[in-house]
Length: 452
Image (cartoon, rainbow, N blue to C red; front, side):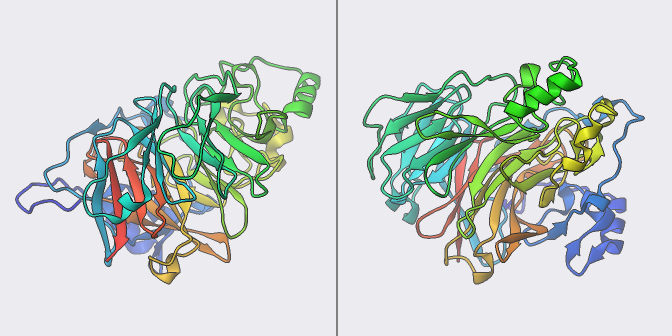
């Protein structure tokens, strides 16, 4: 955080963390036990690579509530405060004054759409606003929605509709390029999505433009109370229609990515076992669909990692019975041994309790050439770890369209002290001219990052 020099700033780096970094690095990339370090080592350009072997076993012998450290305190930023970004980049305030700004999406014509979840509105900034130096002012495209989140444009070129995923439904509005207000009322495409607990429904259009994906998070941390026992025969019948590893009871059609025709018909589970896929991103270079996932709590401060995974039709990602591939959750030991060998391992692991929310692939030339094809991921930050982590934007390194497993800090500095922050990154998008926009839903601000 760039702040005046007279403002005191609390920084505590545990000696153990320093020792870990000294002995557990491979080149400049933190590996091994060093990947367990906390926010005190965050800085733009610092990379780490979390491998399954680096993740300790769950703390089953302790009270699982010890993994909960209480809610973070959000404070107002000092005057002129800006997040830290790498050398050669600059961060400025693009717009401010919002209530829970979350998802950002760039329309084909360059306009910027924002889901202001706290007011039930979808806002739009004209494309030319991203090139200016003064804070931008949006107009209201749509309103009266229950916590709007995901946004998608259909077709991808010269769109005729804007789809919006609210907590309880997916709707679409008639749209023409450049519209700053919906030209007609909302048409409900998917109705009656359950709203208990996780409510962040993201959207992504299939590469062929014929189908829409929607993510629906779980109704609980682990599904134990809301899933009554079923016989093996009942489970087999359930999975024949809902997919391998699909949950049931109050978790039916939860913890999934679903796919449907553009008119809402033929909806089905596309992938299962995803506790809370808060962000969907279609990769331009490959057409692969990627998911940003919040994993479960109550297994300890370092277990289990949030992740970024390629989403495959019919794949099962573990929740609630397994995590990190075939690692069984202690609370559900022995419940589903039939699933152990069918859990798909995610490609990129983030520190546990980072609360990963959203992603965008960088497909422009404004940043240095090495950034092209990489992904930016917003880590909202979580309360479920005594020494905090997250509260930053990271760059996921790709090679030939595939993640290397390495990610590095890109935007940091929001943490004032352990338990106190002035910003929480939520949404990311890339503007028509190649700048990165980041929404902060703690103090209602959008930042713009450009190359100097």
